[in-house]
Length: 459
Image (cartoon, rainbow, N blue to C red; front, side, top):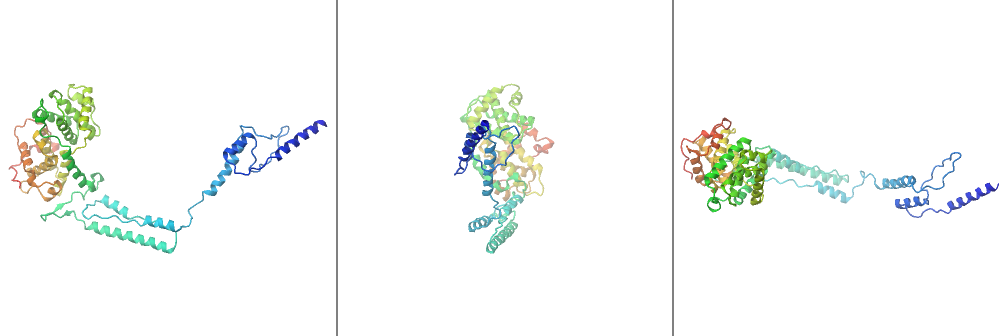
């Protein structure tokens, strides 16, 4: 009896303690819920289903500090329901005046301006059409707004129609001062890597750069004391054989010789280190032009172990420091590629023999120190002139198209063409690597071709 009365008194105390707990008057945050849960004073946010305690087991009145299931589930569910109330589906939102104005401004794009003196290939035409043909945004609004969108569509269609009419009238012929045709050599290219839209700007930049980075034409007299012009020619002739041995591109050879001349214009070098300079410049040019450049050990091997790997790397550091890492310089090859394209425009089919002959004549100038006084673009134009004259003495080799793209008149080429023809007609040359290279059948044996009569007077 006494035991039952004591137990009833304890239960009354617990009921009084539970009744004194008041509901919180402020929003429950996660931090507050966690704090209340740890202290055991967290009030229930949702009515819990009553669970019948097992027989012989007392129900727990509190949760331990480590039991946070209640706060993590119930509080989280409360915040999740609020998120669903905030992030509603906005696909059916009504459009106010500001929304409609923004969409119409986006749709009302001006069509691309067509430059009539610009050559358009298929790729550029597609890009321009894509720029003009902008689909207007669908506006959900009044009938007046729908009418405005339709008007924008009609304007875009009209712009496309006008653009097509203008481009269809574009001819590949450009007016010239002497009423002769100048053929557009960039309009027929569909390959985006040809950069037809930017070719004119690119080559204009090369014409400026060749003046900035050209080597000295008299460094043998002003800078060098231990080497001669003949030594330089022998070095270049040997480097031609190295290019053939490792199957390097002709661009690598041209850049190698250009780097050698630029270095010799700025630093003194002994004749024992001239070959080291040559292979080092070819190593740098290979890294710049080739996909898979030869290793340093390959260049050491080609010199029969005359120079070590350490010497080549030290020279590489010295060359790059002298040149200030300015390696992107125009060479004869860069201009020759475009000038050959301009010359080929007058042929119905590509004339491979002419291309090989022009490259052969241009490479002959690499071994000649005297040609440093001529700009690379002038040498390339002269090689094209002499190649056309060698193959055909009936028609004049220069025409308005070549004059337009080379920016040289026939009279400007007089000294260079005569000097180049003197090398071509030399019957007892000292350096044979280039001539033997172009005597091969893969180059149509163009080294054996000569013109039956000298070049006509250039006026």
